[in-house]
Length: 110
Image (tube, rainbow, N blue to C red):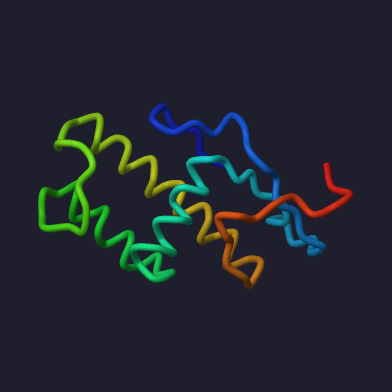
């Protein structure tokens, strides 16, 4: 997991699978859940559309939504979110399934 000053990665739910391919654990924080919810709600589950919109926002081009005015801090937050999305996409590809915002640690896991 990539640490980022703009995104809190300190606490979350560790998602585990029965696979032992080196990518079987993933710390799903509130920031991850927020990004998953946005992906599923605004972009109909498409990481590609979400990423394209974030990159357009960072570049000052037209984009779907605007929560805060453009600033260096906003651009740093977008960069952190893009790294988090990259981590989640990598995990999803390794596991062969999408992460969901309501995902919980399987019973019996620590």
